[in-house]
Structure formats: C-alpha cells, structure tokens
Image 1 (tube, rainbow, N blue to C red):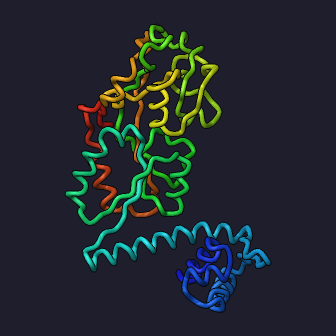
Image 2: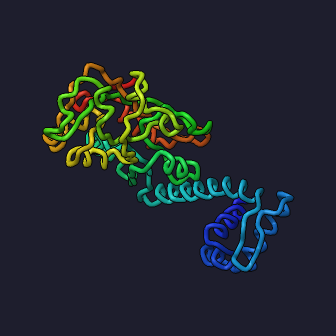
Length: 303
C-alpha cells in the first residue's frame, strides 16, 4: 500500500464521491479510480461500492479508511513541520483542557510555552472527552487534559495524572439549602452535575458513591463545567465545584460554600494522548509545565 493510494481513499470518502475527491486532490477522476483499484488489488479486498449517490465503504474498507485517515493526518502534520523547519514558520499544536484549567493556570502556562516554542501555534478547545478521543484517534488532536480515571478510553491511550485539587459544594448567595450540614440533606436539592466515568457507565457519580448515597432526584447534566458555573452563580441549582474556580473573584463573590460534615475527596486531572505514535517535543514541554503544580490556585502536583 502506498501513501498516495491511502490518501486517495480518504479524500474520496471525506468528499463523498470520486468526482469530489478528485477536485479535492486536484487530479483527474481517472487517476482517482485507478488509485482505488490499485489499492483494492493490493489488499485483495473490495473497499468501496460505487452507486448513484457516490461511494460507500465496505466493512473492510471502513477498517482501512480509519487507519488511512490517521496516516493521512500524520503525513499532513509532518509536511507542515518540515515546511516550518525550512521557512522558520509556525506549526500547530491542538489540545483540549477543562474550563477550570483554562480559567486559572492556562494563561501563565501559555506565556511560558510561547517563550520556549515561539514558532508553535496552539489551538485550544474544551469539548467532551468523547469528542476529543475521536479527534485524537484520527490524528487531528494531540492531547487533552481532563478529569478521568481512564476507564474505557482505549488501549492506545496513555493516561498520566498531573494535577490534583479539592472540591467544594457551592450554591448561589442566599440559597435555601445554604445551611445544609450533610450531603444527605442535599439529595432533595436541585443539582447540576458534570458526568464522571462511573456516571457515564450508568453508575453513581463519585461525589455521592464515596459516601454511600444515591444520586439526587433532580440533576441537570452539564458537559461543560464553565456552563455549570454560570448556572450555579445565577440560578437555583447547587454543584460540586473545583477549588480553583473559587479563587476567581467573579465566582467567589457570586457563590457561597455549603459547609458539610463530609469532606469531598480531591479529584485528579490527567493528560491523555495516544501511546502508539511519537509524542512531539512541544507536547512534552507543555506536559512538564502543567505538571509542576500551582498552589496559589489550589492545584497540587501529582507525584
């Protein structure tokens, strides 16, 4: 199998047909058809079926397309890096972080990183773990930093704990449950919760499971902690909030901590990346910057 054949398959599938794939690659339709036939001949399997609505992947074609997409993306990134070396231009590093990291320590980390790697352009998102995993698998994202135990992320993923912080239960000012003394009392309150691994798998969120309690009856699920913070500050719902959020003045002044008899266990954020491809030096540098700990923000380093 040659790279040109694999990249042709990816272009045809992504564009939705041979004609559109040829336009994307800026080659003739005959050249596209020839490359696909050569690829099918070499693997000895039918990879696509051609119809009035374009091409459809066969079962074997789907498997090869998934791998070919990774190869194509990595080759594109290699081309970009080589071009950067020649022209002293920029290349991109793409990653996702949690909102609490973005709001507290990320600005300082980026300043230090930019001094070390002035030619590297970063693209940062928040997204869900599932959406980030799909991008890491196809090679379009380098890594993410997320609150996860690593359950069901896939054997190809490396999960390395780097930061730990405490959790506090908070509510808006003058909330009717503001004087509650235990989590059990709060089971009848309205919560907003960012699902964790256990909850995603149909279990009980760790905040309640570690104290032998069921889930509250009224829970609004929130995939973005930044949205959850806004809801708590301005609404009637309560939440377990990472300590660093409470060091931001606009949040600290808008919420009150609910003093509970129970102490919530600290949570750990991990850096997650693919272990079956080389880790770029720029990613290694960023990992070291995140790993040093930030006590002024309530983040401790994971040994």
